[in-house]
Length: 120
Ligand SMILES: [Zn+2]
Image (cartoon, rainbow, N blue to C red; front, side, top):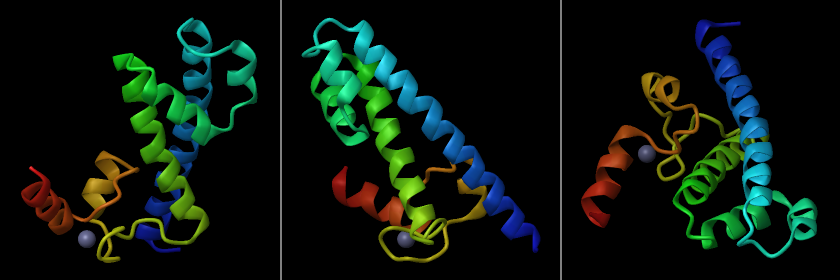
């Protein structure tokens, strides 16, 4: 195994862990919150439903958590597809330092600058 393969593997493990932790944290926070439909609905909701509910709650803390969850979930999906570490826009490899700073980073530097410029 090369060093970068090992690094990728570590990053993926880190992501899987964050994914699990976030998912249970998000569910718990939702349950603690009386604004959401009902405890039963939250218990039975799948992750994407949970994210949607948290985002539409307009509670800043829950909203941020849901946004992060979405990002981490997308990264975990890309692992399953064998696309992890590749930019979602141009499919080039994402800079290793950026992945180490945030394992859920979906875009390479060039595309991030590009999208900031266009959606500012
Ligand atoms: Zn790119």
